[in-house]
Structures are given as C-alpha cells and as structure tokens.
Image 1 (spheres, rainbow, N blue to C red):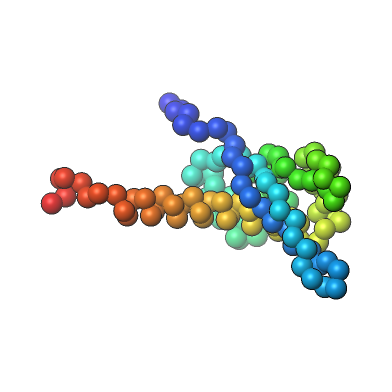
Image 2: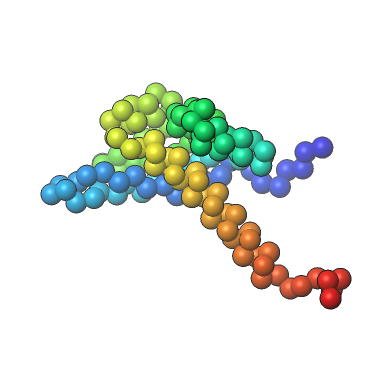
Length: 127
C-alpha cells in the first residue's frame, strides 16, 4: 500500500559559480525541482554514482524534473532536456552544480530530521 504524505517532487536551492569579470566569481542562484525517491531508490542511485556506474547526466535524467532559472535579462529559461544539454555544454560545471544541489537538499533534510529526533522529549516507556 502506498501512502502519499508529500508531493512527487520538491524544490531545492542551487548555485552555479562561473568566472566573472576580473576573475571574480559570478554566482547564479536558482531553484531546481527533484523527483522524490523512495529511500531504496535514492540509495541505489547514490551508490551507482559513487561507483561510477552512472555519470552525472544519467543521475540527473533520473532525478531532475524542472528548474526556475533566469537568463541575464531576467527572462525565464524553460527546463527541457535540450536546454539542459546546451547549458551543460556552455557552462562548465553546471551539471555538477545540479548534482550538488540534490545532495545538499537531501543532507539538510536528513540532518534536520536527526536534530528533531535527538531533541524530542524522551519516551515515557524508556525510563
């Protein structure tokens, strides 16, 4: 039986940094939408990525659903696989920023859950 507690995907912050004028970093902050995976699916994908059985592209094909990204004029850049491929080609390191956003969001969520669990009042049955 499947119980739905949350949407099928979630938004997470992302940051891509590229070299700007005078070699100063230029940050592009945007949001990405990832598919919500079952724990076993997430762990399997992370293991495959760690073991280099899949690359960043294949990983993102499985988890990336959308983004809220704007160009330098403030115009929305719609998410499509073709647009993603173009940006990955044009912006060295963009794909890595997307993967990093996935792991950062997951880590923050798990850390928050752990803090909440550890700060909860002790059970009346554990005394």
